Figure 1 (cartoon, rainbow, N blue to C red):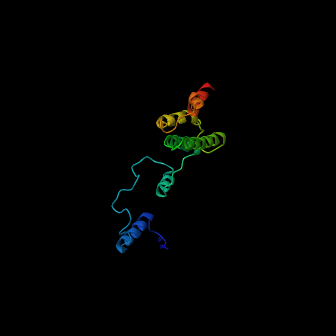
Figure 2 (figure 1 turned 90 degrees about the horizontal axis):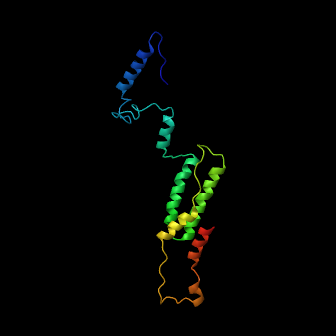
Figure 3 (figure 1 turned 180 degrees about the horizontal axis):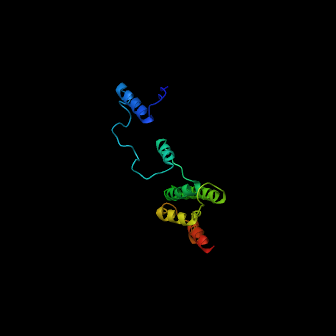
Length: 164
């Protein structure tokens, strides 16, 4: 514990005396950041500087759910377009839509949510365009006569969605 300030000595001179004694004893040698400028000294005043510095040091990112869901939605659409199958793409999109519905319907911290669910059919249409079906060669399989007249399930599925 430090000694008490003697009576009759000003605070400034007493502090200077202690600093000089510490300097002579080598207490200030090899300190972290010695000779480097103090970070953020010239920046604007921020009352929550210490919280932001702690989050940076701890490598913690936090966004309110209503803002974070926007990034999740973009990531999910990109993942769905890169999915290996249409079923996987649909599953990814339905999961993010469930999360969006939850955030939109519950009271959460942060600003109000203004994000809409993903239009699954339009994203799947883009997926189909990026992943065309391989052509069936004539020698692989000969379709039955009744099958050749019927539209493919993929074709009829598109037509039905447009009519609805």
